[in-house]
Length: 220
Length: 220
DNA sequence: GTCTATAATAAGATAGAC
DNA sequence: GTCTATCTTATTATAGAC
Image (tube, rainbow over all chains, first blue to last red; front, side, top):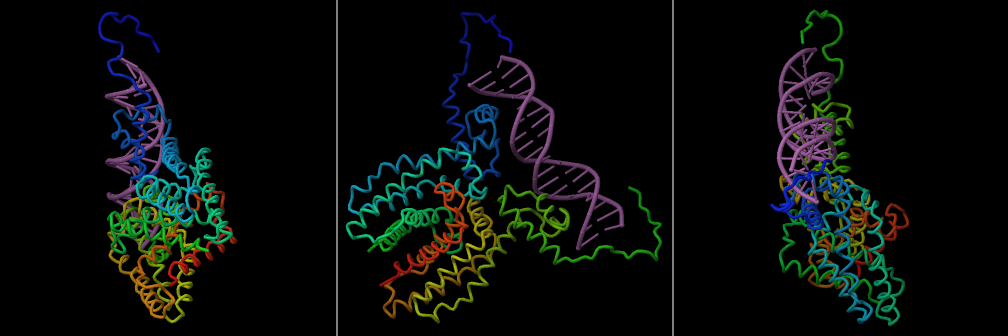
């Protein structure tokens, strides 16, 4: 690259438009989330992502090298959002049934509010988890729930209110199943059985139901 | 291209290859299932579908007109497979808890055996149920479960073994959630928590667990 | 770091012979 | 009904100026 050093030192600044790498990067990432969630990895168009940004397509390749790498970063970002909130639950400080209720409601609300997360996970499963395996960080960040839930189950069993021998992963899976399904399948289930999952009364009803199902499941 | 019409009238038959419309159509449909399930609607390539068939790409357009129409037929076929088996359960002829157990185990086994069905439903939800709405048949064929389950719940409540006021759709959703999730999310959940969902011992464990969860949920 | 223009290729759909 | 060859457009990715 040749340097044009014969610029008048007194006139306009060297840069007319302010460069802001971090902001540009974040801007692209947000646009990518929207596009990947709506279209899936294969259906997403780099042009469409560019149109959603304040910058150009060239910058996408400049920062992320390829559509696939951009997708992996989106995956990591959306998985990462759960960890933050999850670690602040303090389940074991509560009475066991209260702790369980809080965990279930927390998981329910998180899925309900983060349709993006649910969609990207669905898409990732269509691709057989190919990209999640490329991310070393995602796996480690998800162990927190199991540790907390295990402590809760032990405490409940010790005090005799929960039954013995429950496995944290099983309970976690029961909770996740329901919370995930009512978001992931809202369109097909909603269409077939004519239910509107975005309706607030329906939402409250489901929330109450899944708490009850889990209470009955762990009860001694 | 010039036409060589000077072919001896007595020699080879007009058709060297036997035409078999129904078989060709079915052949294409099966290839399409494989491709759509593996790649999603957007990721699926018509060329790839053609390669999986014993026929050519031209025939795909001849029989199905477009990639989208072919996709809708795949959707209808996979949804249709459940109905057949579902209608032969005769739940109400059994003792209530036995009927419930049979329904849960049936749903579990169906999802476990039909990963294709689960994948296509996931894909359809990414597209916000856009194509399932185009099919008039799918909605009607799914009402059977609810009718049967409703009768079962009433019978159980009448004899006092089930609690009162349970809604068929809620119970159906609880069952479906778990059975669906462990297939739909086997790759991400499996990777994060290092579980192999195809392992037979794991499978049996989950099957027993979901039956137990439902028994506890409906118990009076 | 950022932009516009463009190369290279992949993919849905069709023409036309037999 | 079936085949091969091809048209047309869309899409990922890059070149090169500033």
